[in-house]
Image (cartoon, rainbow, N blue to C red; front, side):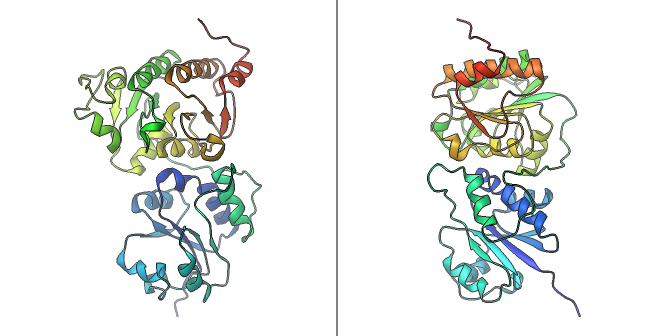
Length: 336
């Protein structure tokens, strides 16, 4: 007789950055329930990475037609078996939760995707999980992941995009950021281009290595970096990020992934609140800068500190203003 392994169902259908912010809570729960198989429901690309990182054991595509029976509360689809418990990051998960609770021996929890007030999203997720499940890790605990980098050389990375143009600076900022990274001694500088950036960079190829810059949204940055990266999937992106000495970006899923992977991350927040949506990571920093001039001054100070001390000046998921940076970088002063 084959005994089915006890399952915990994990459902998250959102964007990469939102999913990453659940990882500390998810990893803590996994650590506390070692005898259970964690089965994900969500976007295949992100779920596949979660399996590779050990957060999940398997997954199902949230768009699969047979899952409509779960979400509507009609019946449990046979591929799911009878999960012992579940965490559903769903705004409309009441029907699915009621169905799962009929056979579950552990809690079935609906976690609202949006935090209340100015509570950080990662803390919001962690509190929701801890309210129903035991957790062996202290609050604020962060997982560590073991990934091999995809490139053998030393390099820094810049990602100029995000899910909203309001979060981004003009392309000139990213070009100047590449110069600052190179001056700080990070090695060659690569520019990460995703589908959104590719629309503005139709002829993206090699930059200083022989490609020609474009006149699109990334043109100024593209002409100053050493190479361009177009990861074909999020797993390739994770390997690329893992090998970077330092990463500069905006409030984006790529930045959130860099931070949680333990990369020295500077994620600029132009229009969103890092107190709620800040990148989480042991080496992550979230400077607030409303314009590119302020962002560039801040970046220069941070890289000077990084060059001198081998690390960024402020720790986990910090949201900082320029005045704080000045006091934490040996009282450096901006040059006129």
